[in-house]
Length: 159
Image (cartoon, rainbow, N blue to C red; front, side, top):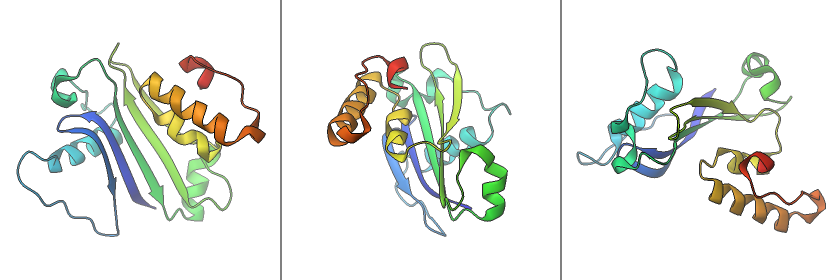
C-alpha cells in the first residue's frame, strides 16, 4: 500500500491543498509555501496520541473557528492490506481513504474511514464545513435521483 493523495484544509500554510503522490514524491519550492506543512500534517495524521496535539498556531492563517482536516488516500492495496483493514474495504478494493479532523469548536479529534461506503459519499463525509456538505449532498441528490436520497439540511441528517 502506498499514499496516492493527501488533502489538507486549514492547516498552517495550507488553506486548501490537494497533493498527488507518485512512487517517489519530492517537494521543491521557496520557504513558506507549505513543504514542511505537508510533512507536519502527515505526522499529525499518522501519530495520533503520541504528543502530536494541535495548537492555535496550527490553524491556517489564524482561522481558528474552522476545522482542520487531513485526508489520506492509499492505493495498491494488497490482500494482506485488505485483511488488516477488515470492515473498511471490500474484496477487490484497490484504494482506501481515511481522514482526521480537529474540531475547532472543542478541540476534539475524529479519525474516520470509508468503511464499505458508497464512494460518492466520501467527499461529502470528508467536508469539514456544514454548508459545503449540504451543497455536495444536494448535488448528489440532483445528479442521482435513482438513489432516492431524503432531503437533509443538518450535518447529522446528511451523515
